[in-house]
Length: 102
Image 1: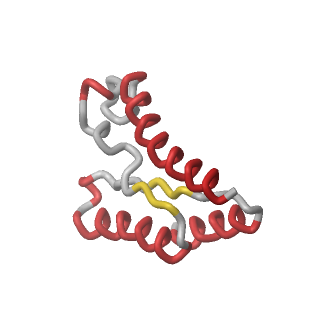
Image 2: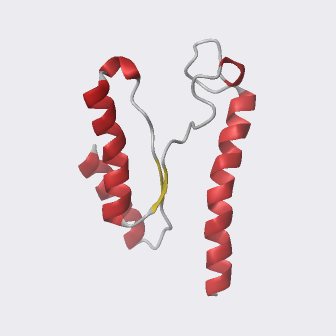
Image 3: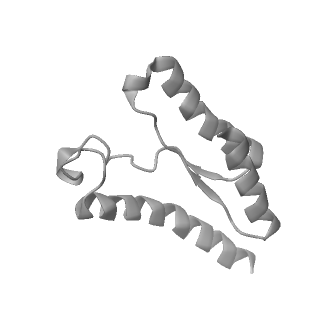
């Protein structure tokens, strides 16, 4: 996974695309070692590739029944709106920086 993420990011950067890496979390039933390694992979790739990093795309949504569909995994419209707001906060920062640089 780490190599694939790094390759995708390098390809995007070669095309002058601003990259934001949104991390994910492995379900706890995979065990503490795997979940820690999974989390660390995103952190390491973001640091090594020098890209903006959102530690967990589903922060404040995952695990909240009011923000997820009946399967408990996929966000419902309210959850999607909360995710969009989190992403927008990062995008706004990027756009402000790009505007200031031009």
